[in-house]
Figure 1 (cartoon, rainbow, N blue to C red):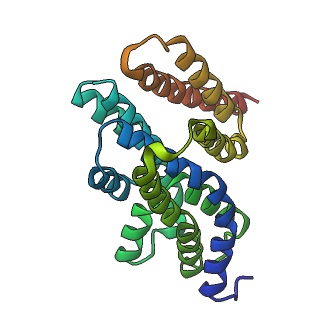
Figure 2 (tube, one colour):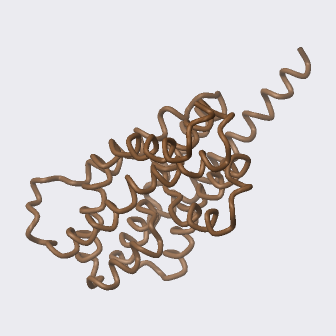
Length: 238
């Protein structure tokens, strides 16, 4: 496997990224509809999609804009939702950090949840691959995922009200994140952070403009870090 050319890794990434189309397509379609309903025109919707290319952050920002939330709250929430990208980048740096600058810039732009989930699993299974193979795999996964986000957002923003409400496209949002996050919950710290984030978010659902999510994220990160510290101290004393 290590002697295979980057082309093989690229097409493996592309094939393994294709199943995510089942959730990316309705996810993008839904965002196009929601963005236009929130008052964004076609150009604004597509500009946001192409520049931000982060579904959860876009949904959070558009929802707050529709609720007339202050601009500062919208920006802070969108950034907070996207903070996980910093974690993704740190996790991928040991594998992709030696790639040329232009490749790293393109990887940073197309770094979305689905691509990260695939790449993290691939690099864990085949850590001996060269940097070129790892980059090729990531680009293959990106090609299978990202164009659908653009295209389906365009369709959703264009068709808008023509899509029957009975389609209930919002099912794609929780399914997408459950499919990605569930396999990653491998340690006690991961489980603690997940449980705390859900619990605190539910308890703070009363806070205006969904700002309870910001608090829940911070508390969950602290819970996960404290769990890891507790485990480390416990191992040291054994």
